[in-house]
Length: 357
Ligand code: F6R
Image (cartoon, rainbow, N blue to C red; front, side, top):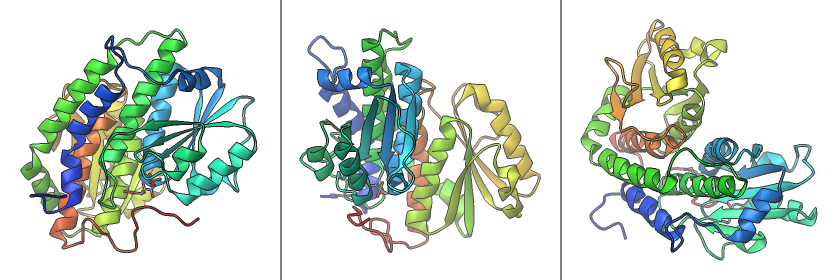
């Protein structure tokens, strides 16, 4: 039930701190360490390459998951759009492991790939919110999101839950492979839950940002570098699906290779700056578009902020920033859609789970 909330989407955004804490609890062993089923860890250890397959928001979580698994567990990862995989199957490594990411566990495009790779004799893990869903039943292994039912068509808490669970899988695999992490993931996830809460308490701020930047624009661009680029892709999907503003996410350096032609006076550019190593270069990209008249909304992380930034998010570990940098984007999209009188929970032409290919 949505209780006092006007929309499920807002309720589900607000549930993210709770879900993050629940995930820590569910994946914690008695001795306090993080734990994932041994057979799943063994499958990760045995594989020479991980193939993540997903659609939409789950695909965007997969892009972040690739960074987590590669940086922490040091296994190469490819991320594929489910609907393309059938026609465009990549050359597979000798010992592939497939990870299907799906909130509903019912997405037909992902299921088609699962059936195919199972027939080829490969192992598959499904990361899903729904126990007993088709993708869970048909895969060898399942990791649950424990996010509670997600009702709004626009996915929010499932995205952060997917990233949190993938971070735990990456950390446990890293340990099993003998790579020590230089941070305590349980502690970081706790810090993140608190940071999410702080962001959810700033709704007035995000409502105002939506008014300032998105009130009557035709289009909007999201830019970022590295992991911020992936979060920008998710931010643009969120904005376009519920507000119908044409939104695109770009790698910071890519805009100037063509799309910058679309920048006019007042075109909103939402830039993410949460990564120290690319802080100066993303700010250089902002200058390029501002020189063409863009209206920049800069969301940076504490410690990397500069004068004039629009909003500064709390500081968390650089690999885990998507868990909190996405929250402002979710809230800004929500308010942009609300101000435009859109049906936030049930956007036109969309269904919660896409069960046709
Ligand atoms: C976007 C959204 C969709 C889903 C996609 C995959 O907000 O909800 O893009 O993420 O249809 O759905 P699942 O995760 O259920 O496979």
